[in-house]
Length: 421
Image 1 (cartoon, rainbow, N blue to C red):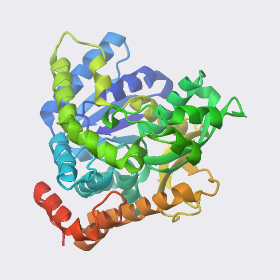
Image 2 (cartoon, rainbow, N blue to C red; image 1 turned 120 degrees about the vertical axis):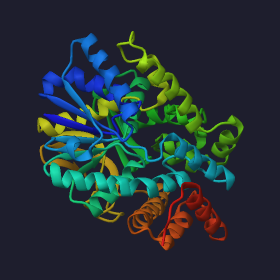
Image 3 (cartoon, rainbow, N blue to C red; image 1 turned 90 degrees about the vertical axis):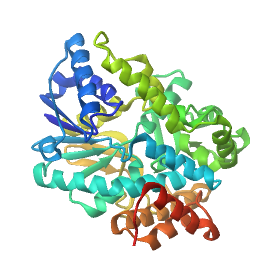
């Protein structure tokens, strides 16, 4: 097996490779190729990963390249984890939202939209290289906004792509821990979109324990970028479902914006500080194991999520994983070609979404509104359409109203030096 990592100079890469190295023999992994447009970051990360694997005795061949075609040629899997514009662009996305009294998070609201406009064209270039140099490869897309980017790839390329996020895996682990059980003993039924999904049923060793899990749901664990805000208990009780982490932006919007303002710095600035610390460690020739500081970066269980998917496909396991895939009617209330985040049966032929129960009104309206936004955002990014961009901003539940959308869009385009027609 050969794997290419696009965005190999990311601070996340040691977490990913640590998992891949540990399972290399079991999955028959022979080669990993790290690709990045920043040769200095790439060399730093690759050198550290080499020390790490030598120390653990799990080394396999891993090469670096700044040539995309070389990186993907003949590989079995491509893992994409790019950030167009880096964290400086992410900072501008967050500040864009705050300037206009809106959510500017990297995957949600105007921040997520700005990131999508920058990212989708770059991901389509990567897809074109895969089509030419590795037509049978599976592209595992970690690049945010993951569901939206995956939808663009499915609609505008011929690559075999599956969107992946660490949040469903993390949530599964957290719920199991709250129930005092192993993850393997707990089954979750969820439905939604990427960063917009709900756990509807929790079963422990076959027994429905949703009511017990709901008591924990209002205090659901969250990534470092989401602060410490809890859902009101009465709301969780009425909803009867556990909202995943990022729904705080929708259900607790005012408090989330207030928290962002009070912090005095953006999450991007925090990440840049963490990354400065991480790269100092990576450059230290005496360090040869994954640093504890990596946990502050976010992305918990990243390698676990990737490995579970790779192994399910490679070994044709037919196990169930929560992934971002083309709907194909699994969620009857959404378009068949839309990307949804749902439990899927995974094997050699890819991921098949499992049919969902009817979606209740309490969450269906939000799902449909965000999906409409995502469709418009894909059109805006692919066609460079100003009209689609304007409509995407207004349609998004966390976006500006029609009176202010033009100003927000102009600010976004000016900030990132983007052009639409």
